[in-house]
Length: 504
Picture 1 (cartoon, rainbow, N blue to C red):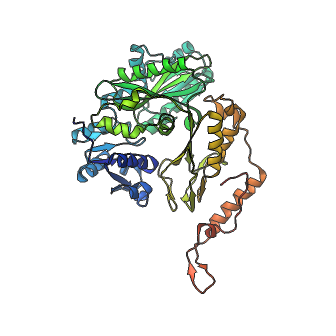
Picture 2: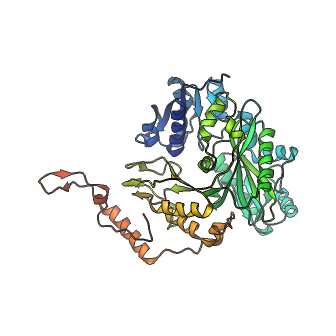
Picture 3: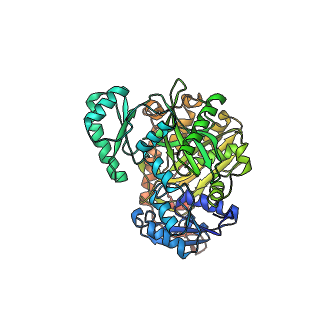
């Protein structure tokens, strides 16, 4: 492996993470090649890259999940490396193996490390051997309900059944008493099979009032491995993170060092190289337990960059090219506080149903300490083909209270018309007294947000907006001088008004 950087990298992803990687390539003077499906022909990532290759129709299995097509696109374009981003093929160990066979560098961990850490059961066994603290539970998957019953009795209820080969909340069930174990087991197996083509599940103790805290790690090919501090990801909806922050208010310097040291030990035990994230659950007594390792760059990586002044994606590329960890990574400190909100195309006032349509108006918030990692622009078509994340809004301030205020203001000033988003829901979370007090646990949303109501005027305004959008026609606008023009987004909307309670 040479320690020279690449000339050209293919980005095997779409939307905001593809844009993020393309921008990192620009920083390093590396040409980028985007891949896109027919649904993404006018996408931001396709237009931003130096080159772009059509790889198939909208269904992911025929485009972004087709390893052969992506490898061919990289070879035909003369690329030397492939960056997978996150999602799609990023944690599929067959992908780096295919890259290696094709003579391409995979910007990520070795396939053996990915395979090990991608299986939660096998990784638990490996980490137990390395002395890493684990949540009590099974060390092997099983099919026999009796095995699960005995494990649950030993661990003590409540327990959680989890898919062995996946994540993202799929194949997970919380069981509060023995009567619900059998049905939960069968449901988890069905969901795991559908999501990961593998129905293997296992059981572990469910920790109530837990915090979900992860540590960013970086390891190069020369034996160097460091952690880049923690991110708290406890605000979750249906096991999906929606708001992340760093530093965590739950960690003092002593606990931070202990957890960081364990995170590095996990990476070394796995033979890990490149960027990864070691995830822990922290109980209300300060005990912490290894949860899993994500073998890729994380959605929430920007908040780490904001408080450390680093570029993790640039460092990923440098490591993949065989270079040593940059010297600053050995002397990092945390400065200030950063928060990230994920902007999803979903109706936050109606059970988070997916929202589709065309972006009719788009304005990003701006100012010191405000960053937007976006995959959309004015005119973008939002379809049901892919993950609903549109963008990530990140803020940085000297301390947590100021970061919260800055984020709320930035959300109010982030204008996206044409599709619904969950911005107002996130504002409500950020304004909640328990969040302000730093009492952020993984059960925060079901405990504090289920009785959330919407002002009656907001209901009327939302209904009026929907009616207006569904009834409008794209007709030319009379300019008053005998000519006609294409209507602006505001004119296309028809009758509309902005209510203070909506902030759209």
